[in-house]
Amino acid sequence: MAADGLLQVEAEGSRGRKTYSITTAGRAELHQWLTETKPEQRVRNEGALRAFLIPLLPREEALDLVREELRHVEARLTELEMLCDGTDESDFGRYALERGLRQLAASRDWALWAIDRLQKSEEARTVTARTPTGEL
Image (cartoon, rainbow, N blue to C red; front, side):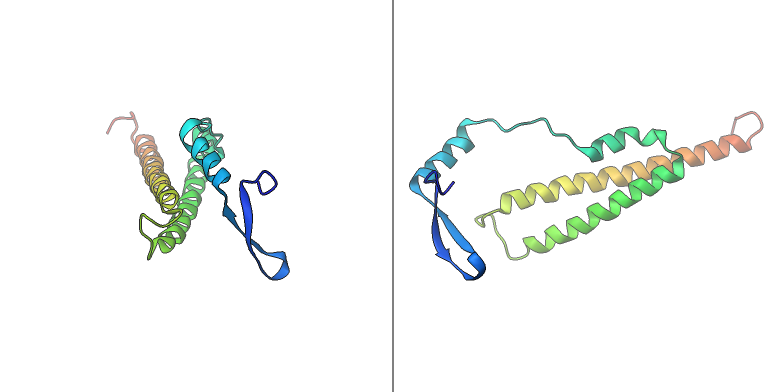
């Protein structure tokens, strides 16, 4: 981008570290990209594919998988929440941070729902298996 005149070196530090600033041409290009292009909306999400295939696993393995997902999501949520401390809406990246928090919160809610659902379906199968006619 520097070669295209969109960025310029603002300062150089130790070990070749460089700080860049956006040029007038870069700001115009960024504005055009933000306002006139549409982002790619197709997202390939391995987590969503795994969620789709959960019914193929035995209940305990499915529960383990979802519990691990929940642990991961909660840890990441904690990290992002700590980044939020002391930031406000005018801070660079705050909107992206909020988007991440909300997506993770939705993932946490899904994991809690899935765990509850898997546990209830196992409980229902156990109760049904214990009754001679399948009736309660």
